[in-house]
Length: 178
Image (cartoon, rainbow, N blue to C red; front, side, top):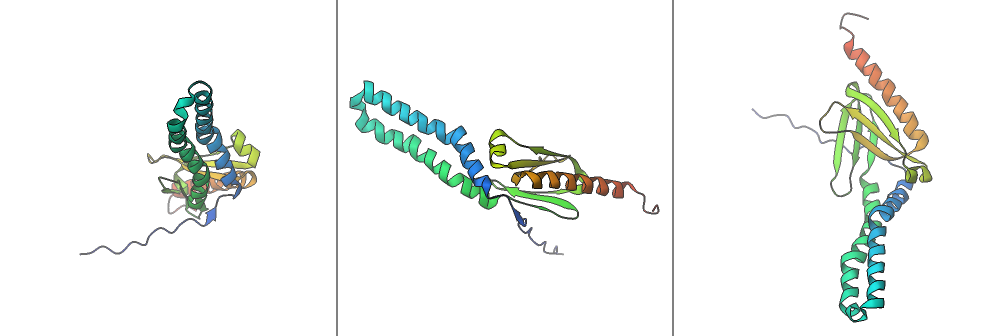
């Protein structure tokens, strides 16, 4: 006996805000690329001042090991992340997809939603963005929708909260009661 074919899960319909690419680039500059570029510059200047003979072999080494990876991360990560981050709120579930290197898709039934949080870090506030976190009892983790406009994140949090409450109330009501 063969099992019926299960259709694949289609990608979520809604993209995050285009400003999220600038937010992710700024975040990369502050946390990864900036320190790497600063380290390369500092080591290069110190070697030029105190060990000028090492520059012929050290400069290419710094470029290969620090500058190229830093610039690659700064330029590629925001684009790739924007291409994969999406979300959708259906009648029965919240669906999120994301990642840039390790991609993920997660669906949470509204009846299992425990909390909905909206977070805005300093860089997110600068770009008018927020991250919505939908928490369930699942061990797989939360659904994080990063890069939403502030107003949409607030509206979505209220909508998901109401829908989750309605779904829990409907499932708790006995079949015969109306």
